[in-house]
Image (cartoon, rainbow over all chains, first blue to last red; front, top):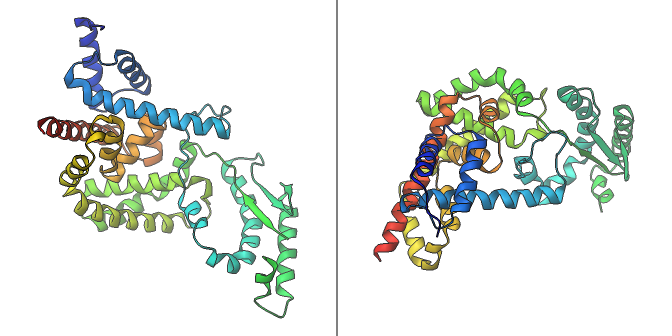
Amino acid sequence: MRTISDQKRLDIRTLIERYMAGETTNEEETTLRQWFRLAGDAVPDEWRPLRAMLSFVDEERDALDKVTESKGNDSDTGEHYKPNRMTLVMRCLHRPRTWISSAVAAAAVGTALLVPRFTSIVGSEPQNYAVIDGKVYTNPKIVKEEAMDALQTVATDDDPFSALNMMQ
Amino acid sequence: MFIRYIDVTVMKPSEFNHIILPMRDELLRYALRLTGSADNADELVQETMLRLWGMRSRLNAEGNLAALAMTIARNCHLDQLRHESHSAQMTEHMDVAIEDRGAELRDETRLIRSIIAQLPPLQQQIFRMKEIDGYTADEIMQITGCTADNLRRNLSRARMKIRETYMQIMMKGEKQ
């Protein structure tokens, strides 16, 4: 079994105190996690709660890494850990389809209106796109025209509920 | 015809901060009315900002973000009230759960996960962002609009609480 030298113990104790006070940087926290991982069972009893906490963090980070790798890394931005939380909007999308039929026309208009707005938030690069009948379009003008055509199709029908049939 | 809108925007904390910063004061006043305490109001605003950050890819800067933020703040406040009444019985509930599943006493990470789930929502989210998602303190401050001191305090509280609860549960397990 490895033993911890007095100097090393002092260094780690100082780091632990700063960690518990919320004062450590991400790099220092990585150092702490690595140290506990390598130390294994050779840690004083008083540090075992921290070892459990950091072991949990290691597991969660590994799990998140796997998810990120399977979805493709965001290496361009250099941001490794992007949470994959389900947003409120995504939760709404998982609810029953009761709202879908009434939202078809509104979604078409919203699509046309949102495209230029989002580009104005994040910069001039065209990052958003719409998929129309399986094809990708980045031109807001085309998207808007297609959306208006879709609305026109719905508007000229005598039966106000016929849009439901189009979804089947 | 089927049209599907896809947003692939990756918003950075600084960009998010630029959008939400102008409404922070108004939100803080609203939070103060809800909570009646400056400290609690500040934490409520931070939690609201974190929830907005969670849905950042769908935010529209020209939409009524202030109204959305206030709705989220109100819901967070209701969640906090529910959490407070629930966490008053936290240790007892957790002990019972551990006693029922003696084998899990040795499963440290599962125990830690259970303890974290009992932390106040803001502490849970900040702990997760800093420890697991790998955000820096600066990024979290930009997202929540909180001060460095405030962030340190919340992180410290979360870590202390996890350590204390873990020790209490383990000591109780050893006595049995």
